[in-house]
Image 1 (tube, rainbow, N blue to C red):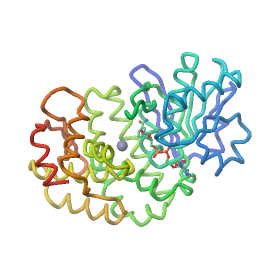
Image 2 (image 1 turned 60 degrees about the vertical axis):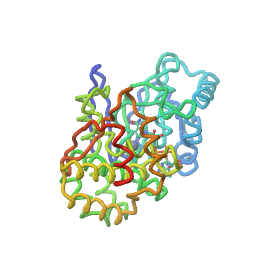
Image 3 (image 1 turned 180 degrees about the vertical axis):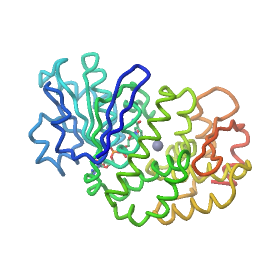
Length: 343
Ligand SMILES: NC(=O)c1ccc[n+]([C@@H]2O[C@H](COP(=O)([O-])OP(=O)(O)OC[C@H]3O[C@@H](n4cnc5c(N)ncnc54)[C@H](O)[C@@H]3O)[C@@H](O)[C@H]2O)c1
Ligand SMILES: [Zn+2]
């Protein structure tokens, strides 16, 4: 087991435990009454253990990641007479932890909370950063808070039951971290791809721990996404446009988006075609998609609609070599051509 300590600007501390067994939950709970907000799939698979706790089960889907679900959870918390002395534990993947973290942050002006993070994506990515929240009127993660959990338990054994598609989506975000921060990590993903696909616990735990450490370092320097944290959006500009036009899984949209961003990086003279070839080879080997057939116009319109600032440029994260990210402002007028050439 490894422990990663996160310190926030506000001086709050959060502990992420990789390779810890979820049945040790009790060791991390304070003396207060604990209420679990748990993904019903996890309850069905691992309920023997969780039956010992007061549980609120939720269905983990994007369409259910709403204020209505938060309202229903709050009604249950009131019914269970949960007061400010209680402790909340979210148990599930990114959807459940985002909902549980948000509910805990607003119920009675905020209760302390922790997570048992059960998917590869939530262990390697969503467990760190303190973002939580829900979707609103079709806008993803539109309502939420920055608030750190007291602890996150990342149990690699739980990944055995994760559906293959979800596993690959988590892997895509791990590769993103390697591409923007750590060439050695990228090389070890290449050499250990067989073990990864076999879900070797030692290999996975190392990758999860590395991803968390890198993300934590970035966030430690830029908690509120004013600068460096933006590099975590590598691959995500096109990914969001793909997701707006197709119900492809996020991690698959990200692998396509990363390949597009890499091709743009080559176009701007930042990397050689060897990098593109290495990425393509790895994505094929793992079963991650790397191109899209969605119409160019639909994609560029979605990118323009998604841009956060009201100017004629888009801040785009590119690669300046494997393990090194850089940012470039690209004129939106240029996007249509770039998309049709490189998507
Ligand atoms: N807070 C953040 O910083 C952050 C970062 C990245 C993503 N997210 C959010 O995370 C969400 C996606 O997370 P996700 O991919 O974990 O989705 P998820 O929570 O929906 O989990 C994916 C699916 O896998 C199932 N599952 C999870 N763990 C399992 C296990 N161990 N065994 C069997 N089935 C299991 C779930 O029931 C679900 O059907 C998105 O809503 C995204 O916005 C948040
Ligand atoms: Zn992502």
